[in-house]
Length: 381
Image 1: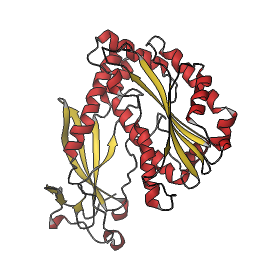
Image 2: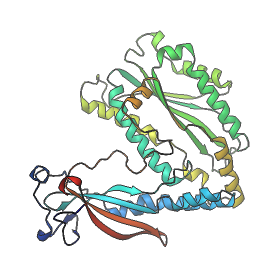
Image 3: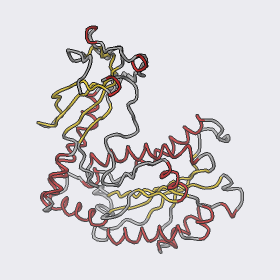
Image 4: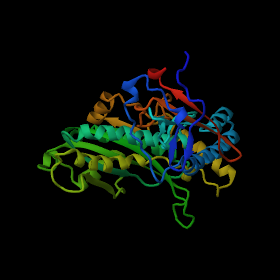
């Protein structure tokens, strides 16, 4: 289809503002669209260069490092996919009807391998999870309270990791089928985190520490009577019995609430609560724990193989009850699905009549700009 009124030259960037030359102004043949001004979200601290250098570059370098390990342990196909992850990026900048361009570009297209251990994909997945949970919170807090629970078990050796994960998952299933649990807990969001002790002076050096971080959904009446309340010791006893280990001495349970203690009655208070809960989505398998360059290659390879085997077909993030119902009702993507969109997180491009697309490729240890173009939206073509 023929494009109309396409500017003859590309937009030019002048400092923090990007403006088309007067001869390049977009046509105003469609008044409804052209009279709609986009909200320019300029940030004095943002630049595409810093975004690439500070966020994408470290993750891509770690992905290349992981690719080398996959290659050494005989997983050539995985190695190839992970090595290419994030090697091509496109950012989209809104162009309004006056030819002004939003400086803050949003990731528009990219290749992501979606490997569970890929640092690039893990980062994108955590951002997606953060955004999705944030959308659930306002719905949940209309009728419920939220708690933050951490359940731990003793550290295990690398050799015992798979057995420990099996036992941990079985204990969680047993706990959630407890009669009082089902009576009081109306929903949950559970994340599995695995950390590794890298302190060479510690007695537990090189051991692994799998544990759960959980957001619990409870009734508004929680705590007003003993039948609708778990004390800290009750949570501990229930977890000890479920895991079958009385040596566990710690559980962490906190009420998540706004900064002031008054009842939530306005949107600003809901946002404060949403922010506090969404912080928990940052928990994940940290690449710094298993991509340890201080280890000999043989130990690195062995560690990745152990983690991959132990976490095979395991859900790192899991929803249940009311939390799951709301998550599904909002049509949110499963972040662990192999087809999950890791490019677009929670931002949508709505205003403007065209997009300035800037493109980057990885080469020689950094991202290199190689081309840009204008893409017109269908309404003005």
